[in-house]
Length: 69
Image 1 (spheres, rainbow, N blue to C red):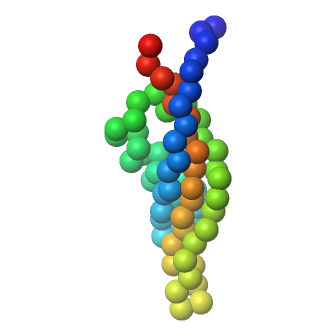
Image 2 (tube, helix red, strand yellow):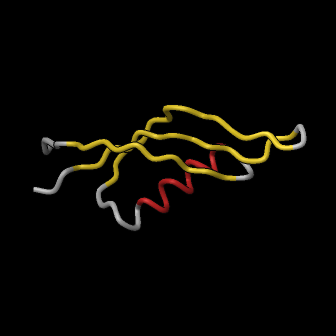
């Protein structure tokens, strides 16, 4: 087993449908420019209300990725 060093960043994803979709949106977008992402932790879930209904979700994540050698 190899020892790893991780760096963590914070991302906020949004979606109009579900919190899970907001998480997926954040990770999929970030994966285009950040390599070696390994895990995430949901730090906060919030949303916006319009006309008495949920308009969209915002989910803030802590994302860990391995640092290159």
